[in-house]
Amino acid sequence: MSYLSITWLFWIWLTVSLYWLAPPAWRMAVLAALSFLFLVSISPLSAALLVGFTLVCHVASNHLAPTFRVSAVAILGIASALVFFKVNQTVNTDDLFDTVAIPLGMSYYTFRCIHFIMERYKGTVGKTSLNDLIGYLFFIPTLVVGPIHRFDDYRRDRLRQRFDPAMLSDGAERILYGYAKIVVLSNFLTEALLGDAIAGFADQDSVLVLYLKTVQNGLNLYFQFSGYSDIAIGFARLLGFRVLENFNWPYLQSNISAFWRSWHISLSRWCRDYIYGVTVAKTRSPALGALATMVTIGLWHEISLRFLLWGAYHGLGIIIWQMTQRHGDALTAATPAYLQRPLHVAKVIFTVHFVWFGFIILTAESVGAAALTFQKLFLFWL
Image (cartoon, rainbow, N blue to C red; front, top):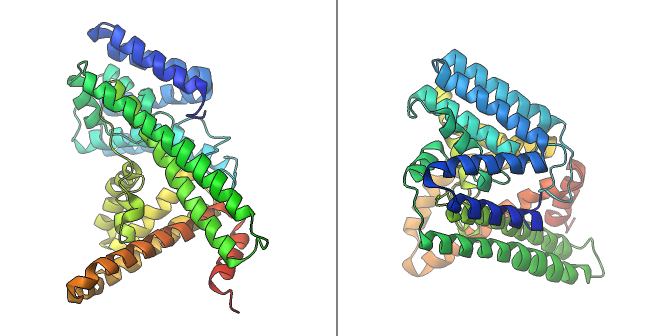
């Protein structure tokens, strides 16, 4: 379901209105009920899966003792369901946001479930009532496109619930900001105007056209995805919840590691905690941890060769940055003060182009087509 649809705007209005009109003691139940009705109306299969996942989380983490064996079985079962749908997901290289075969929001609530089970196993989250767990997992603002908010953050805001006009104003402003990114910056400026300019070139196979299409794809993905996150964050604030920020000017970062601390922050943080940390602890290899993390991020989006290669591409980029960081820091320290700013700008330009060229792997019709695009871009003189 599109965030630009009248249906989604209706659910925002209905949820916020009924939530604040309900007595304080009933609000979380009203919110959970509306979230369930939303899923049932849009994707009954997703609603059934989330009900099942919630019961698995509750039984494994609250009803039974959250031992390693119990937690591992629960996580394996939930992850296997996600993998099943990911494997059978319809691939659409024209629209990376089009997920035809996977139930609505499944990628996000699966990782929230795993997060809850892991934190209960580690003891950082105490025994939780079923009502609290339902409220956390059936949280409508983040059901569709995240962010992957944490249970502690959700519980903190739930306990601080109060009607705050400033939060309402901030939430409405954030939603408008998100729509402006999607409609104006992405659909109008990037897709329409820049797209028409690119289409006006006589030679559509020229290096300049391929480069401009690469820039267009990079800008469009950021404006669309960050715009969706803004809407989700704003919706949550209308309900009195401060959801984790998901983007922090990623295209202005000076290295690939900083980029991933600023792009899809909730997913990067999840993978850092549960993939990178575990891999490094077991292997003592930051390089292997980086590669495992980025491959996981790639396959989380879609289990396919293109996303596997895209994840490995970024993993290798982080490894190379880790290996050369010390020399880079020394070079920066030795650079005269008047050249510090140009050097920083050069690093930013290099990083953002590394990211944009990586998107070619995802948007090309095939891996072979992606390789041909790289050949045209970088070996055009041969």
